[in-house]
Image (cartoon, rainbow, N blue to C red; front, side, top):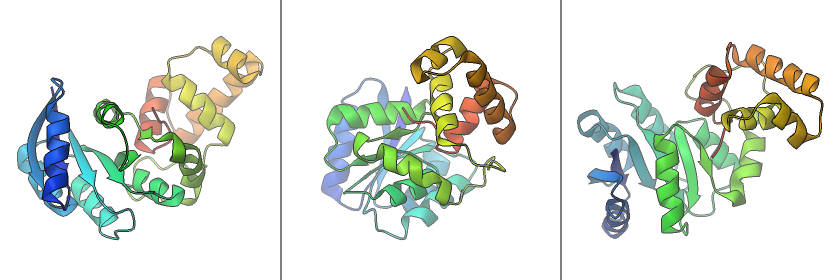
Length: 215
């Protein structure tokens, strides 16, 4: 069962999110707090798998709070609900331990799916911001300092990495992208080199941690 901690400034919003999370038999709400800073402190004792945060996207406290969440002995995945996030903000969030960014008007099903995806180690972005946010990642420093590649992946390499995350073989990747299997092998080798990994599983794991792979 996935353990979820809810964080939001409004008591009404916290109650609503807690009720939503509790409606799924796959989740257990371990607590609710008023801020991401409080969530960082509570995570050390409540040990949530996921922290579900509702917060203003322009709030400068978000990134320091996320870094605090990652500084302890227990590091949960983070799902953020916010209003009209910019692509650059979403990219910064992904570099700061967030695993899902959704608009406030996201449906219950979308929030549940985001929590599940984040708990599984995936990155989840809303379709309205996904493409632009991923394009902005190259310009945003990695605030978590986790396996930062010496060279950024090209857009094509990111496409290939997404397909590796789906478990697709080289032939299927080649067919989908309209390129030769030899070219796919070249891209996979380049991905391995840039991410300093030696297997597809490692590549996907590092890609998730860098916010390069989304659900």
